Length: 353
Image (cartoon, rainbow, N blue to C red; front, side, top):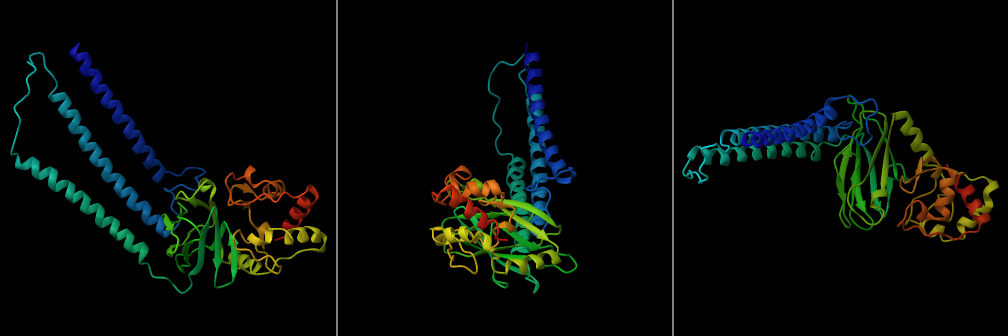
């Protein structure tokens, strides 16, 4: 009976070890494997220097933690097997052991050394990211967090857009990083694009900053990583990493005023005579609101409602008619337009490219 209990105990511990080992192997495969369709938020697939630094320090910490786990586990199994209850055990407590200088020294010095190594490695990464030199060719962006959307301003070219950040790819031979100044218009937010950089908070009445230098063209997904209210989970953002030519063309188009045809005059009239203009801006018109996203080039974006829905005719019409249907808890009011006015405003907004 005792052997059976002992065998079951050892098997249980071995099972725990197998599960933990499987977890470590899974993390390792995520780190060094090459999945066919990598997740756009996969922290194990860095595509920017800051994210790469965070990735390497994470792997370093994971290896140290795995070694500590393996040592402690082996000692635990050894103790359970060697000092298990035998048939001649009388049930009395063994005499305590005091004054082992070797043991005291080991469990004091080793943890200190481990913490010191982790501290120095982390400090090196923080220094390399935070104190990186800013080259003259860097792109400057101001990111402002709102409940519950992102505002992006490019002060050097006079561009204002929302939720979808466009940056040029950074050639290692001629780096073109993007430096982002982070502000908040209301409460705490956190700017996080896992494959490009670590999290940086946006705090009211304080300006923080971060930088990215994407090495691959593509779309990188992120979101607010600090609970900021009801729709925190849908405060999404996209970073479009373009080639130099694509970025320059996008910047030229975004700097132009809105192009509106005569066929949508009714929709423009409805838009400009309702409360829409109190929150939204459209360059070249009387709309100059700052509480909501700039709509000058609304249809150049792939999504609406800060990434909560695709920018299609049906979704745009529904968003104007009933924002709660797409994003419950959003601060955009339903304008209670008639079907005719709703169709006219939707048609007008669809010309803003």
